[in-house]
Length: 218
Image (cartoon, rainbow, N blue to C red; front, side, top):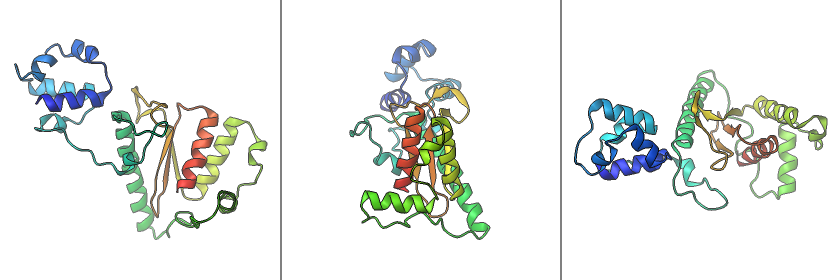
């Protein structure tokens, strides 16, 4: 269907000319002049990074990812979320769910940081309480350079049961880079396995800021 193909093309964030060069009959498919073969649909699905089944439905699917309802860029909602961000969120949700099931099966208690702090605290009080929870000195940043500071901060947060994941590409696909202009980081809150994802395409200062920013969300 034209509507589905157009949706998939927009979601891919690829230039139409690039897609057309790879699939010369894409315009015929859009206009229902010809139909793609099963192999061609497979190839298009892979090239656009859109799940195969999405191209077989009559209307564009609605991907109801809760986190995306709150993602903003420069305080404005981004019109089109990239497949790279969607697939990264889905990948992190799978990893988080696996870890949660493991922790619950092993008899672990809920994470001691999630929902521990009173949301009515002012920023200064919140920072003080959070530093105490993760044993972070007030002048921790003076102890090392930026790169070591991020690693040290990550270790402290991880020690407190928060998964800190980072990547600059989707899984291990070097052809699918994550765009720092779209997102720098995100967190997935869970009672047992809270998770922070950091986009490594960001600067060291940016990664440090994002790690602390997402920690406060948790």
